[in-house]
Amino acid sequence: MPDRPGRPDQPRRDQTRAGDTPRKPRQKRRGPAGAGPTGSGPTGTPDSPKRKANPLANPGRRVSKPPRPAQSSERSDSPTAKPKADAKAAPKSDRKADHKPDCKPDTKPAKPAPKARGSKYPASQAKSKPKPAKQPKPAQPAPAEPAPVAPMADGTPQGLFFAAPPGLEPALEAEARALGFADVMAEPGGVAANGDWSEVWRANLMLRGAGRVLVRLGSFRAMHVAQLDKRARRFPWELYLRPDVPIKVEATCKRSKIYHAGAAVQRVETAITETLGVPIDAEATLRLMIRIEDDLCTVSLDSSGEPLHKRGYKEFVGKAAMRESMAALFLRDCGFDGREPLLDPMCGSGTFPLEAASIAAGLLPGATRRFAFEDLAGFDAEAYAAFRRRITPEAAEPDPGFRAYGSDRDAGAIRGASANAERAGLSHLCQFTQHSVSDLQRPEGPPGLVMINPPYGGRIGNKKMLYALYAALGRKLTEDFSGWRVGIVTTDVSLIRPMGIKFPPPGPPVAHGGLKVRLWQAQL
Image 1 (cartoon, rainbow, N blue to C red):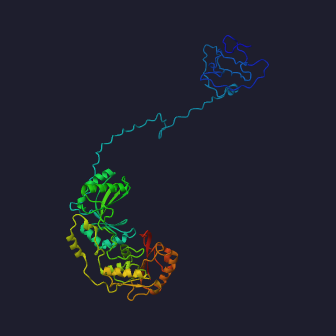
Image 2: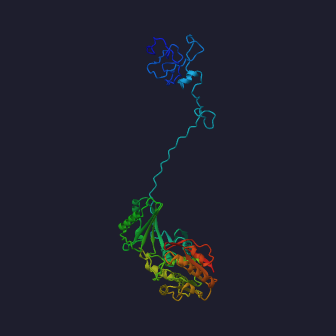
């Protein structure tokens, strides 16, 4: 049995038995850097000790010969010879080391250092410009807390807003300009203007198309409900509210940190009650409106009370009747000025004929009703009475060419419309008769305006059955009303087509009773 390999006092023996066929060398593990193929010492040193492989330790294992040491051009025993370092610290495999000892090293050449931008030298050698040191920002003083926009000492309004149905703002703007209001400008949902309390009185008495007259009292910033409560207590409510008159508070929030309208209402109600003692009532006619938009809280007051379309004389209201304020704006869009006759073949409770007669007679739309501003603090009843007498026009006969005609197939509607005309004092200008559309006759006199608010099929009637009604109405108007103008308020163009009348594009959609209606006009 052979001696243990690796002993320095034993001569080197072959690693295979005598008579064995040579086998292919097997790849061995790499040794540490600077070690030879066997990992026992540096290569190229002839007298370095090497360990023999024991073939009997693992008979099934293949043993390969160690690679030959690299030959040098100088003798190793020469006194001037110096051992050269290996070309490779760690060979890729023993197979390449045995069969290709002179192969190129497996290591790849290092990439050149990247050059600096705009320079031919590497980035490590490029001269970089020193960055200027950041200067500290000067300390800014904290912003002062914004004070509320308080009203004037006499409680003069900060602005007026006349509410109108969306789509009819231009018509209301034209009416406000015609009446001489200052700084009139149409806005979504109404018209803005400026004026004192006498202008508030005049707007409620004279505007036909406005639904309400809102008075802006002031505004302030509020980022959270605690700040809203604090600034609401500082607001001069005593200039407008009375402790014996209940109010109702409403709020809307848009794009603000205060997003809960109910919490805003509660804080404002508590502030008003604890500072002034004003009672809160959900059924009160005096409404205080809080609008919070972009963290700006605007306080407004509804000076009208009940909506302005309630003229005070219309007790009978038909099915799906149109409001008087909307009817007045539609008449203005049609160019009606009270000097030509008007005919409504589907009059219902008589909204269009009564409003046209009121325009022709020059009556104030709010002359027979009461308003919420009469319950405000500082209201002067005597000054208001003198103001009403001054702006009320004297009784005058309307234009001789005017006459309002209304007809309907419902007998109850005709009785109710006639009673409304009696209460309004316009029965001498209105004529109501009961008959169907097929029996419609042209009135004597000059041509005028046919104004119709027919059923749409949404709340009254079946839409499929209405096509025949619209077709019969169109034939009657085309045959007997040549020279007249026609204005029809309806929802769908499919109801207009059977009439056989060429209508230009209609007006904008207007919300009415949960539906979207349009005004169609044509010259017959």
